[in-house]
Length: 504
Image 1 (cartoon, rainbow, N blue to C red):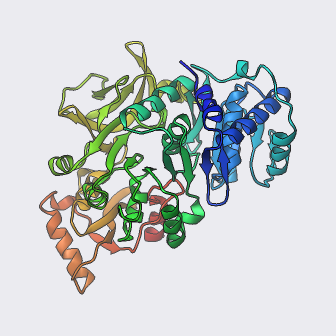
Image 2 (image 1 turned 90 degrees about the horizontal axis):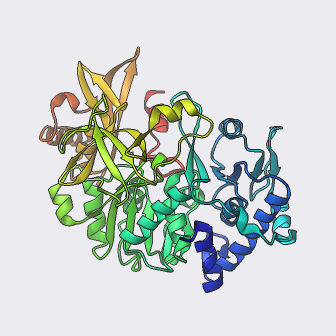
């Protein structure tokens, strides 16, 4: 089987002038992508930076894609770091990874002696002037070698580097291209920054199928009018995003099939997709296929999927997160590591070829989170779930529970019930903590058009509706109404910012 790099490079010969990547300002063809990545790889090898991870710093610039591929062609894993990441966190990544090279397609200075920085000017010179190495293919990252490293939050405050191998990525990308009815040469949305592993769901399926990746930069997301003009002009066919991002887009009543007539596939990951959002999206894009997926960074983006239809929406609430991909087994286990039968709730354990080999230079955390089951790498997700009719359902984080008035409550359980209400567009529930104890629940909600003249009338109505779904002690005491919910650069609801606003 051809490697990831070999498969992508084929498009430079088969369709050299097809645009591989496009942002709001520039575009990059497959021919140029190969030329640039070959030059970058040759420079890395000649300057003895091979065999160590390389940090690629920026925000959706064309050269980032060329540099990603240049790194792996030189035998190096790349570490994507979005420019929104604070410098102190970046320094922790450098220290943990042992990286001695940072490449950025922008003018950038970093006062950190441990690393050499290649800025935009130097990068352009490398691309223009480097003589290529004849035997470059000998260096390519392959099989169990690390392809990329994505840093996730650690409980200690120090980021953890998840190592994804070429074999992991082949398992994931092959599944996406086979089971999601995708075609060659399609146009993919890239909403997530490259430091968020959701971006892998569009980046590699697009490049491996000769598609065009359309990047939506942060500056566009912050300006909805420009965003919608941009989306309309790009003839998107495959949409990959968080549910929060599509909910933001659906606040515009013109976001529908007439607005994006070629859009035929939606892929969601990273957050809970609510029944309301799915129903609304299906009504606006009746001819599109909508997929809900689930997976942690440690198992290469996603490992389950389900096609969302009217039947699924009406039958299940909350929505299922799907069935495992063919090469993966998912276990539900109790606290002692015993498998549980269908219908029982426990920890979701993932085993299969897309489970990573662990955290970079962090043996303690790796041993705590990873295991071997029947000869396969397995990852303990820390997520709670259960199977019903062969479909996996997500119950929330095991550690995302609160105790209120003696009751143990799942925050996400409350949010799922609030999102069921017809008047609710989106909602977040925040616990109010005092002296280490939860004393109250506060719901911030974006509502649809309604006839209530006073907010307290609306609140009373919502609370009465909620009593149909959950006990009174789970219903938030306070409701605040928002025009929108803030999002992180990853496209998820920014809970930290909301906590600061509410409890400052």
